[in-house]
Image (cartoon, rainbow, N blue to C red; front, side):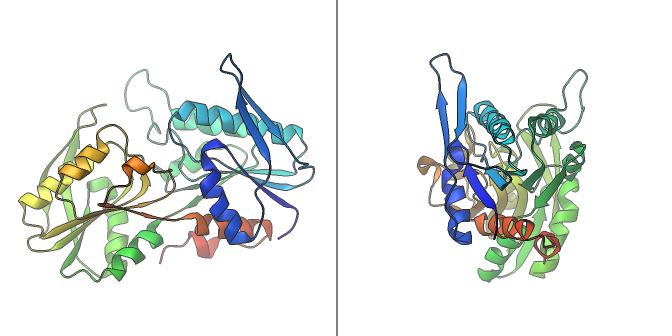
Length: 315
């Protein structure tokens, strides 16, 4: 690899270290601090002139503070004459605010894309967007969308579950669930689910398909408060599922999520580490798989001018 520097924003040091260890590189030196008036200060502590720079930020609370750190760091790198500024966002913030679905509401995911592009990023690398159309929110720069699908499905396959069935959490997720069921060579079932406006509480009522006596596996892009997933778990229990596994790319785990998982009869929740999971949230039911090697390989291929097709393709 040549002419490359990799920097971590404040919440991304562990994830960035994994990437750098994989690539055999040292992390770049960058300083973040806050003034007494709550303003953020960023200084790049080494030259990046004409370098291929990768700036990594994992989004964990306080989310808006992480976003400002990222934008200010991009500006600092631009003014330090970096040749390319590749922003690595394993979890894209505000990705669920992706459309104007109510009167007088913003499309915040589009605003995020505009802010990142205006700040000076030349490429964005992210993973499992809530809506793949977010890639098109960037006007003049590329947005590469990686996926945790291979990571999650290979882990589940290695468990050799008997009488497995993949469960789509709603009609909208059925296409992706079908791809999982194809790889795992098992049937597909579908939950009939309704959501009321901004209410986090999802109402799951019926199962279309047979889950009785089976090992049910649910795949989703993220788990936030776990309300939706736990409603699905309850419906599967009611319909006779023998054991229930949940796989998701992004473990947001906000509010009552951990308590809901603890109190449920879910067998295992499998997450990637796109969002840092604090120690108090690492309960026995939760397994965290590292997706850092996939991002590291992506960085390597981009730096060497090689295609990403094989990495972006799900098995």
